[in-house]
Amino acid sequence: MPKDPWFKFFPTEWMADAKLRSCKLSTRGFLLELMCLMHQSPKPGYLLIGQNVPSLYTISVVISTPIPTVKRHVKSLLENGVIIEDDGVLVCPRMVRDYALRETRREVGRKGGNPVLVKQDVNPRSKKLETRVKKEITTTEEKNMFSLPDWMPKTTWDLFLDHRKKVKAPVSEKAYPSFIEKFGKLKEAGWSPARVVDIMTEKGWRWFKGEWVKDEAQYLPPPPDTTGEERRALEKARKENPDDWVGPEEMAEITKKFGMDFGKGRKSA
Image (tube, rainbow, N blue to C red; front, top):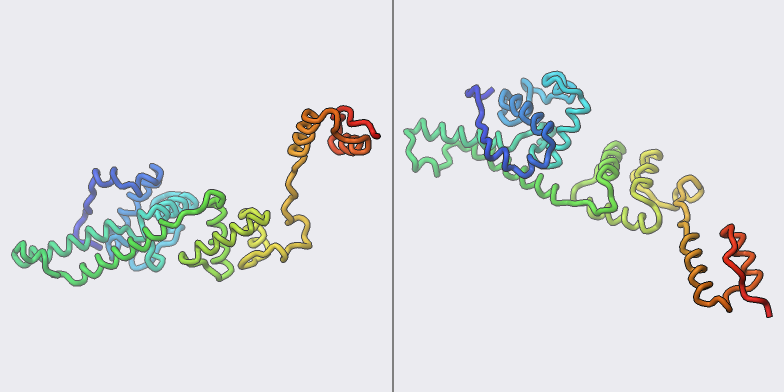
């Protein structure tokens, strides 16, 4: 537990943080609760209770919030890069940096407060911790740079990633673009991402190929409905060539298909 019963809070920076402002008001309030717990942690800035990583259930009990709500807030904070995850532990980079800086300044104070010492590595442990956090933040920001195409719903993508973890084949961040490309090819073949993920989940497959379900009619993509386009084309042809349009047999077929009479066709010779 830190020596100080308080931790620094900068209202101006809090209000100006674009990542934080991307989260809902309720999520920002939830973050304050987490920060209070992180301040009491043996490693300030890390969400530890005692020496243990708290489960979602423990967090929900400690801050009196339902588990689904806790899960939703944590997911939002991670996705927006407000907090990061280190070996399963939730970390607030800002708190870790502030703690490292505070420790460095304490060391300087112990040596008489000489300004020259500020430039020296007076606390190797704090410096190492700060470097590590910066590296983790960079990694998190690189992850957030990946954006999904408009045709791939984020909920479907998240379900796909979760399913791959369950079948012990997690997708690395480097492999994201290649899988999006694969989904795109399936989409061109008539398989929507949502349908592909549904089938993978039901079958327990690591991936999907159309030929694997070719004998299962319920999974085949429905044929496109071109009735409207054909009808408009016939109307156009009838108006442009009223005297030389279709014969009696063609007219009968058209009437049967569309359920209405498009008018008289041309007379047979």
